[in-house]
Length: 364
Image (cartoon, rainbow, N blue to C red; front, top):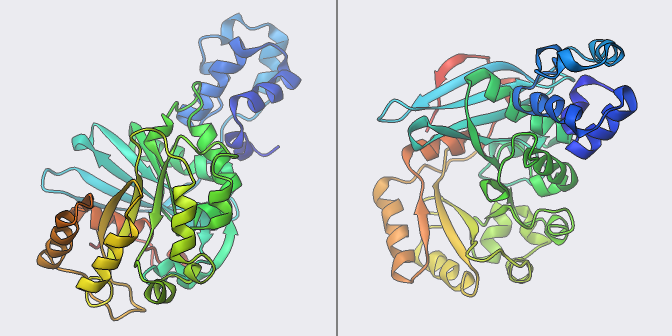
């Protein structure tokens, strides 16, 4: 077993593995797992239980993995808001040298953080507003590589993480089994102990993944759906997934999903001036969300080299929000910092093709 694969274990799996090697029960396995999942390290000698363990157990533990090979940080860039609190984007190198991007987002003035993780290297969804789509799909990430991203940025920034969002590279529901396992690990009481309501999984609307949503234990986490447009012709042009899961089908799936009480689907709508912000497009959006419990998240388009589209200005964004509000549709407008985050979460380029820089500003 590789060191990194320990991060892909729930506590029950870890306990079974440890019992086969050293015996004992949760009273010994629990502190080992907590150290592993909160520090990214396996150093049993540093635990309070070490002196009380039998000599044979100490020997077996000492012969095990002394540390974990977490993803290594090869690039770190930051962007500070008006109060000086920085959002940081990391390029992380995995054990096979593949690169993924992970973002650390400050909340409540930096008292705690949200981590935006990648689920794949590249993506095969082909969304026209996403630079990552140009990579195609290189491979899926394993659960331990997803959890490893969280631990790597915790180590790099000494951050207290409260939320995790699956909005980085790749389509999470195209790798739904690994994502579901990672969610279960992140919520382990003896690990990071994140609350499911503090985890958000984003999707372009993969029907197969949504069909397994509850089966895989994702029913208590937040769901974000990237819409792009509420017109089938335009959405198919922007997001090829619409050709197999058109808007009517997607709405029926969401209506049948079953949300926890008072929970809403986060509906991501990237505002592209002259493309999807015309009155008739917004009218279709307003009509489409009827009957759904949603919060429309208005995201300013972040320009990418392969498209001539421009970013919306403040007046254009405000006009879109006024139109939705007038129709009684709840919406949220991302701040300037949020635009910087989206440049890393969901609109990523290929980090392998960029010159590595450190502490450079995020582009909004």
